[in-house]
Image (tube, rainbow, N blue to C red; front, side, top):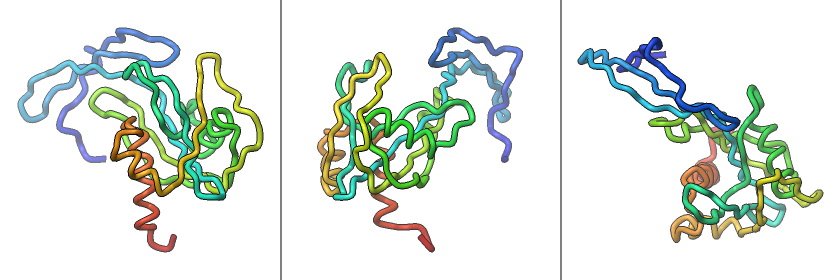
Length: 188
């Protein structure tokens, strides 16, 4: 791995908050170019998975749920946080089943990206599950209230463009899927 432009000063780091969801730390880094040090605030959060699930009639399975940061309901693909060491394909299949009651073909990884590398330590992996069908009732966590919505695949670009789907990680995952449909990998 190439050397970064800033180097950590671990003795200056301090945990500011730690709870069931994240650990917030003040971490000090020194510029290799100028020698100046600067404090950064980093939220350490588990990696996550975004599930692009398609029914046999080419509808995308989405969920609508409340998001406190935007103080609004958000239309987005199912997904969630990974357990430590959990494979994103397995986690995504689990999240799809728990949140929607749907299951389908084995998951395919479409790609991964940093959620917000300026302040978060987590990555999000987007997976694709095709031929999904309803196999049971959702099994939601105590604080989850979701509505399952099916959207024709061809309507996704317009929903992103008009802001019906406006969660940045959801948009990113859906764009990965649209890109993979338009430009399949060599040999795929």
